[in-house]
Structures are given as structure tokens and as C-alpha cells.
Image (tube, rainbow, N blue to C red):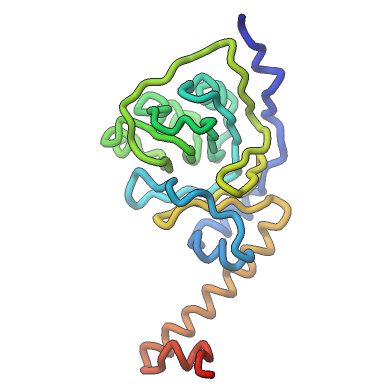
Length: 220
């Protein structure tokens, strides 16, 4: 029996503003996480599959049945340019949910990247296509396409201990992926810029010969 995907698909959720995305682009994930009060860190197992490519943009959330990637294809069809597809795979990590074909489709759609709590495949070819991919690793195991299975697009996801809502700000780099709530992202970015400036001052002091113990007041 076929499930009507439109029942659990929301493509018109509010997205983080483009100017906020641009302000976040140069900021490290670790800084955003720390400056926001140690929030938003997705599971550390989710890492960049393409060296040197980061990702920034509004979350297009996808809750997929395990070992099935039909809902990822559905999300690609409704994705808007700049979206970051973020996928929960229902705990079935060890399957290749995404590969060269889907990365090529994502590039044509203008997707900013993929963040998936599972595996992908075609590792060398993903790098050739050039769409940023963050995943738990590589797996050659194929997925199915169950037209009767229930999934969700544009609904909240629980990734590790972080609730990701559609439209939230997703930032990924070599250190991992952080999710910032759409409503407070501006404040976190402001605090992150100030933190980066302070760290540059600390680095200059260290280069001049001061110690971390004196700079941070660790002497008691």
C-alpha cells in the first residue's frame, strides 16, 4: 500500500535569513558552539567526507525509515537553493543512503550540502561532484525504496541530544556540525565574532611570551 508523502511533507517552513547565513559562513563550528553556551553540537561521529568543504545554510529536515532513501529523493525534489539537507536514518547507520547520483542531483538543485546520521557511498566520486557531505562514514550497502513506509520532511529531528527544527542554521566544518536555533542564531553569531576577536588578542599575547596560566587567570 502506498503512503501519501504529502501528509508528512512541509516544504514551506520559515528559513534562517540569507544575511545571517553569510555572517555565519566564516565562523568555526567550535566557536559557534561555545559562544552559544555549548549548544547544538551534533554527534561527533558525523564528519566531513570531503576534505576542505564546509557547509552553511538552513536545515531541510528529513526523517527517513532505516535502510531506505526514498525520502531523501523526495526531499531533493522540494529543496530550495542553499538548503542543507539533514537526515535522521532511524538508527540504521550502516547503509549507503547517498552517492554520486544524488550528489549530482543536489548540485543541480543548488543544495548547500548534506548532513546525515548514517553512511554514504561513492566516496571518491562525491569529491569530484563537490557537494559538501557530512556523514558517519562510507558504506557500500544499498538501500531500498518502500513506497508504503512513513517518513517526514520539514519536521523536528532529534540528532544525538540536539533537536533540529526545519529552517534552523546548520554549520559544518572539519570539527563537526553545529545546529543553531533560527530564533537565536543572530545573538550566537554576534557572541562568536566577539569570541574570535578575543582569541586573536590572546594569540598575540602568547606569541609575545605570556602563558595560558597568566592570560586566563589560572593561578590561584
